[in-house]
Image (cartoon, rainbow, N blue to C red):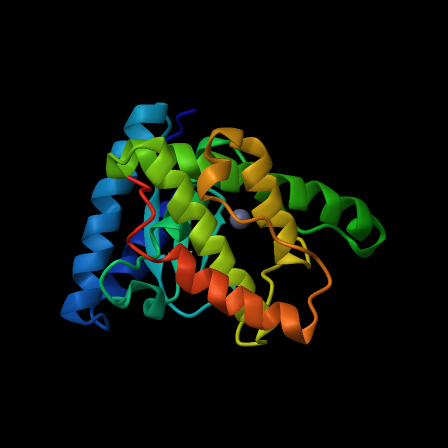
Length: 224
Ligand SMILES: [Zn+2]
C-alpha cells in the first residue's frame, strides 16, 4: 500500500509542528521514540509511513488512527509512566489498524449502527492480536514479552473501565473482558502468564482484579 501524500497529510504535518510547541521535553522524547518505532514497523510491513498528530480529541480513548495513516494522540498519552510501565501497546494497536488496512473505516449512518458495531469490534480484536506482533517487530521484544505487555495493558484498561475512570472508546466491545479473553485465545502458547477475565463483575471480583493486576506487574513473571 503506497499513496502520495495528499493535502490532508500536509495539513496534519503543519498541525504536528504547531502542536509540538505545547509539548514538554519529556513528551517530545516519547513522541520521537514512537516515531522511530513506527518507522521501523511500517518499513517491516512495507506500508506507507504514518504521521503523528498530538492534540485534544473527542471521546474516550487516548489514540486513534485516521484515514491516510494519521495517528492522533492526546498529549497526556505521551506523559512518562513509572518504571516498568508504558503505553507502547497503545501505539502498537493503532499501528496494527494501519498495517491491517483498517484506516478507511468510517462511522455508519444510524440504520447500519448495529452491524457496524459488530464489524468494528472484530477489527479491534484483530488489532490487539496484531499489536503483539508489532511490539515484537518495533520494540525488538520476544513475542512472549509482547504478549505479556499487551495482556497487562488490557487488564489495566479494564480496571479503569470498571472503576469508571475511563470510558470504552467507540468501536470497542462494551465489556473489556472480551478483548482480554480474545487475545489469550489467539496466543495459546502463553496461557501460563495469562489471566482470563470473567464477565459481569461483582464487588468481590473487583477486589480480585486489583490483586491480579498487581500480580501481573510483578517482576517474578518471566515475560521477556
Ligand atoms: Zn482500535
